[in-house]
Length: 84
Image 1 (cartoon, helix red, strand yellow):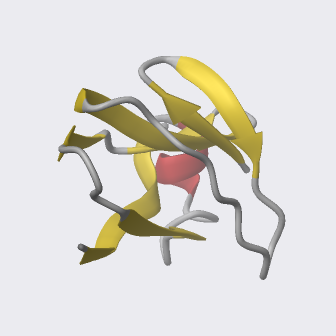
Image 2: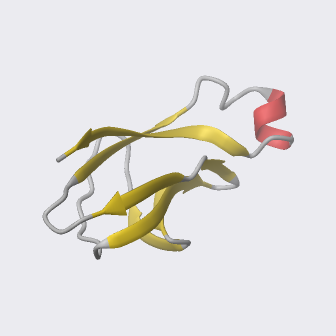
Image 3: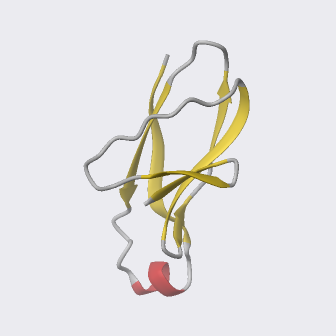
């Protein structure tokens, strides 16, 4: 999977691995992409000193015909699991 921040690919995420990177203070849109499938966008408002942990995974419908050939967005899961 590739991680996108504000429409720009910022990381390649391998199964079972973690990726860490710094972002500027402000509003950001994050999503993951694998081939033609994507997650929904997660909107973040980052303040000075914040850290956010997101988890990405293939959704349970990833191999469903509709997901693969018709509904390409929102098939992968990306969720916020911690903010501090």
